Image (cartoon, rainbow, N blue to C red; front, side, top):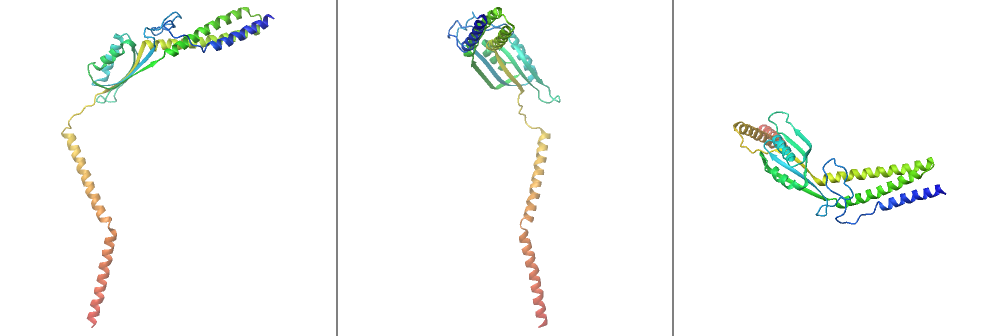
Length: 280
């Protein structure tokens, strides 16, 4: 009888866990989720939503034209550190020769509330000529955060019930089955916690991708370049004249053939007529 009761409790806990994991908490200011610094642990259930009531992930992409991309990249890194952010990725492309162009790409994380100041300051950095492309995106993750919080609470309650059943189990088979279900629930809890921590970091820090390229230079061509262009133009004109002459000679080949046949026939007719006149 005790074994049957234990099995019924286990089935009931599993079914309740599956059903409650899809439920959502009431939307309100008492829902959990606060912003924490990178590497912080998951927030406690007693935390609250921000005053605005929405949780936003912000991202930006910038194309920056500058005189020296490497120097500007160093300035941007210093600016990010000054604002309380950090550099997630840095890639500097050195040219094959000293006169070749250099470029740099950065992925930085800046506090979300300082994103506008960062974008404005980047455009004012020394050596930056202009920012031809700027794209800012915002994603509302409030629903996902609340769903994760509800799912985590349900899983934690299920874990506690399974732990109680594990203490009451009497046979090896009962212990193995309860431990297997307990492992599955704990794995889901870890996945939910990791997703919560990821969203917390992305909410607090805006991701900005920057591509720094050399400014295009428009200079008047020098004497050497002008002479080279003139020489190329003269060769092109000469080739055009030769091709035109060849076309003029080869294209009407039938006209030249007809004229040649006409001249030959005319000479033969004139020679024959001259012979007849001489005989008379």
